[in-house]
Length: 437
Image 1 (cartoon, rainbow, N blue to C red):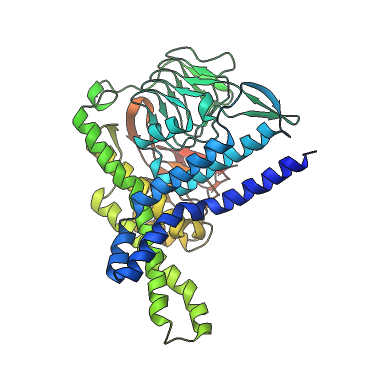
Image 2: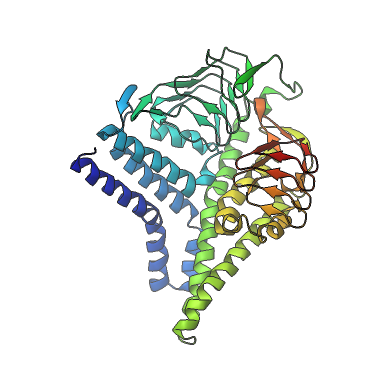
């Protein structure tokens, strides 16, 4: 049983997690409120539009501050869960979850490496890190040139029989960790190795230069290579390209917060204008309608950005440091950081999601149950009539092995059913009535 002291600290941790989003938003709210009272409505609107950087810095600062008080250093070994360390581990994991929610667009950028270093991870130069999950930062080492794709779980602690085990995890130079793969703690991935999508490495370890796919994994004697791309476009970009990417990704990381802030500002401002002319009962009824209207406007803005910046997606192969990859990754970041949380996520599993996804270029048939927003190159997804796409399904129209973006179509014929968290890779054609659990 937990002691009274641990229970009190647990309650304090729950309170801190509840207050964290509000503390992150507090500087923005104070700035906009002061300008609204002291200068005027236009100044407050401009401040809201420019508030993205302030929110991202504020959110990261609060998370980092709480993390310093939670778990400064994770001790290697096996420890009891009902302990001070177990409580600190729980709180630290929750902080990383909040980080992924509040600053999602920060991940998958050059700023991710800097952020993880602040959390205690050992990150080499020229690394690429997407939405990495379930990590113990101070036990994680990513060597120079390594690549960790979306939602990979790298070095998570092991839980069993009321205990938790911590080990150090290392990803070697130029090693690749695929989307949604699972790298157990204590693993060492050799230099130039590859662990594919949804895969686990072999128990015996991963030797340098080897490739593995599946769970349990099988050895791949060869993998697709593109020798026409130079080191400058894959691993060794010029200083000019690095600076340009930092600038582009600064906007990518901060613009979602600004757009979400403008949506909220618009809703509150219209309600303020109606205060003296509409009775209270009507205001109560109008509030959700106004919020929905401004959320829809935000989705339309993001859809317009997609068509202006990228246009229509077509199958192609591009190196990591190409202009096209910068544009498509920018659009993906804005979509996932703005359109999804403002409205699309709420509409998942309803008939209203499909029409909005068509705005982005997804071809969706009739009577489709679409319960996932995990797709990026919208025009490459073709969903026929009577298809069921379950929660958290990833329609993965691109992969990034060896820093080359390979992009292709996914076709789901009538009556296809995809179960929760299924991953469908580019080039897949699922025939009529096929199922995936």
